[in-house]
Image 1 (cartoon, helix red, strand yellow):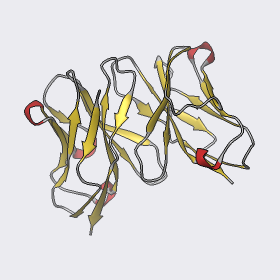
Image 2 (cartoon, chains in turn red, yellow):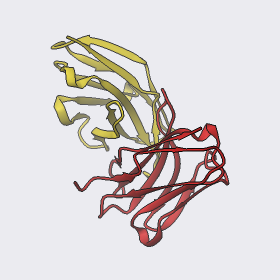
Image 3 (cartoon, chains in turn purple, cyan):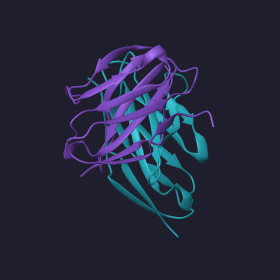
Length: 112
Length: 113
């Protein structure tokens, strides 16, 4: 399968712990996005990379959140000192400039 | 600023009858518009996209959408619903740079056997 893959699919963590998610985009795609989706809502934009450069960050991305895309390939999203409000589905997407984005299946985070 | 409004949070149709999911957009420029489908516990799948070419866009699984600038609409249709179409559908607009995608709140489609 050459789609966007995310790992892990599910993560349960205790409040205050750090978590890291990984996204592998479609190989030729230069853009990579992170979105967050809570129950009953549409996905909300978190951040976006063009190649290895992080070009935009949403106000939703507090200082506990950090995303990287070293070498312009895979990306990681880290959440430090998790809070219950961080519980959500975290979606990664990739695209070629000007084309529609292709989404991964997401990582469901539950903070207990 | 750009945004989309999905006019119905829930739509129920009988199997074999037409589907209409409504979406209105707001954009200060010629927009790019998309429809995505999300099945339970699955990721988002791109159904179709409009990027200023033909106003009637055909997508996967028999879905199509028509861009109507005068009505600022991009409604999703399918002539005959199938049980497997039951899912959440999102209308999406991108910004002028294509850097961000703005999602509607979604329409949950139920197909009644």
